[in-house]
Length: 299
Ligand SMILES: [Zn+2]
Ligand SMILES: [Zn+2]
Image (cartoon, rainbow, N blue to C red; front, top):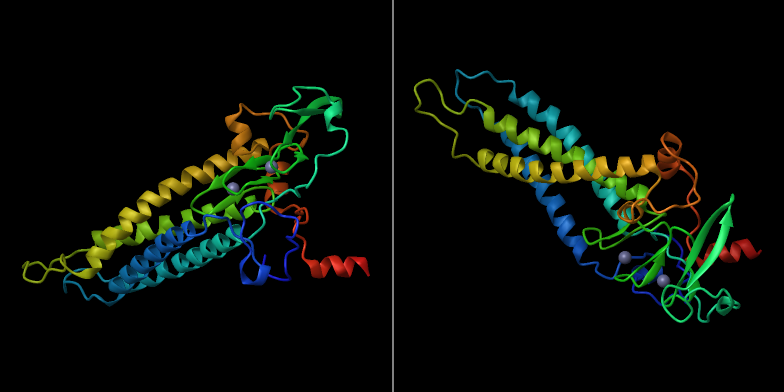
């Protein structure tokens, strides 16, 4: 992610390379601030509500386990939130799997014959007895590897292209898909805990028996309502994403392949081996492999 300078002289797409060429981000990077802002809002209202839960005395007649409850909820909440933030940074600043483009058309491509002269030029290839076709990318001037697609926003071919995510300001592909799944998972966990914090705070007794002392209009109630609304909405959203991507990983399919009615590809794993390899398997090197490591390899 962050390290030696990327070798990007060959690159003609829209990704940006800030920090002296040591980091890669998508062209619509300001979108990241909206995601970050929502995460920070969640952290703020969650921690504030827990603080109110621990500090507010409440009516004398009410049971008082709220100090312990506040501590018990804020610790896992902040932990899940920090993991979500770490994977947000990771997924946004990792090369998603940009495929090296070319200055010239590859030799022999005119000879393959199928649909010459339009964008659907294809190169047949047989793998394990099954016929697949490489598509030619007119922009990158390469035969796309199987499972690769050109992202119009990033203007680059991405290996195992899943989708372009505006929330993360970039593509999700072979090299950052696992970070994306972990980001959705930990965001979902933190949102569920955030919602629980809000519900606990809202359901605690607010008035004493005489009704003279009430806490209904305290800031603790305002932040608790925000916790339930934001946590509830985003926990549902991310839970559906986690469920959908678990299904896709089990089937070894990308979002794009699923939309195309399960387009065939030559990677054979399905079920748990597929999930394991997607989440924990070895990642291929980046096409922007840093100049420093290239020099080391040449020694
Ligand atoms: Zn392309
Ligand atoms: Zn993209």
